[in-house]
Amino acid sequence: MPKSTIAALQIGSSPGGTADTLRNVLSFEREIRASGAALLVLPEALLGGYPKGEIFGTRLGYRLAEGRERFAQYFAEAIDIPGEETTALAEFSTRCQTSLVIGVIERDGLSLYCTALFFNPGEGLVGKHRKLMPTGTERLIWGQGDGSTIAAIRTAAGIAGAAICWENHMPLLRMAMYAQGVQIWCAPTVDEREIWQCSMRHIAHEGRCFVVSACQVQPSPAELGVEVPGWDRDRPLIRGGSLIVGPMGDVLVGPSHGQTGLLVATIDTDDLVRAHYDFDVAGHYARPDVFSLSVDTRAKRSVGFQRD
View 1 (tube, rainbow, N blue to C red):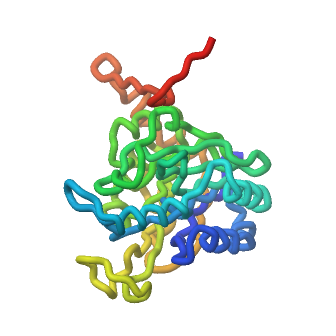
View 2 (view 1 turned 90 degrees about the vertical axis):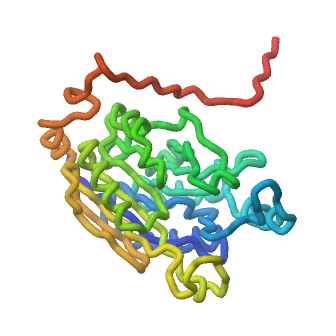
C-alpha cells in the first residue's frame, strides 16, 4: 500500500550515558506502536552522544592529557556493531513493527564513526551509513565513512536513505541518493537552526521525496551543571527542530522545539509520481551529455592482506 505513517522521535542523549539513553528510547514503545508508524527516525549520535562544546583538550599543534582521558570516556560510551544495543534495537523494531533509522557513535577497532543504523522488523539490522565528512572539529574524534555505505534501504514505508547532519549540504551526495530512488530521506541531526529547516524543505523539493529530520534536544549548561566556553549558560545546547516535509517542500508536521516527543505524519508514496511530473533531478531533468557523476561504492581498507 502506498499510504503509510512515518515519524521522528525528538529526544536527546542522556547525561547518564548510552545505557540510560537506550532505556529512554525503549520507553516510547507504547506510543510508537499506537502511532502505527512504519518508519521511525531518531537523531544523530543519539547512542554514544554528541559532545557539544567539548574540546577534548586540543590546541593547534598539541593535545593535553586530560583531553585524551575525556576521549577515552567518550570511546567507552560508543557501541559495537553488532552488539547488545543493536540486538535491543532489533527486538524493539520487531515489537513495534516499525523500521528504525537511528544515529549512533560506532566503535570499530580503536576508531569512532558517526553512523546511522537501519533496522527492519523481523529482519534486524539491515544497513548502516557512516557520515562521509565530519564537520569542523568533529574530525578530531570521528573517522570518515566511504562510499560503501551510501545505500538505499527498502522499508515498510518505502525506499529510505540517510544523510547525517551537514552531509545534507553535499550536492554530489544528494545526487547519488536521488539516483537510487530514495523515497524517504532520513536526516538525523543536531542542527537546531531555522536555516536547517530550510535545507530540509529544499531537499524534499529538489529530490521530490519525503524528508524526516530528527534532531536532538539537550538542556542548558546550567541545567547540566557544566561550563561550555562561549555559550550562554541558560541557553539550551540543542533545542530540537525536528520536522517532516512533503515532496513539494511543504511542511507536514513540525518543527518542534524544546521538548521530547514524537512527530507523526501520514504519507502516500503515489504523491512522488505526481511530484516528479515536472522535475526529476536524476531523470528527465538531468543532462548526462553535460554533467556526470561517478560514485565509488567500494569499501576502503588501509591495509590489505593476500593469502595463497
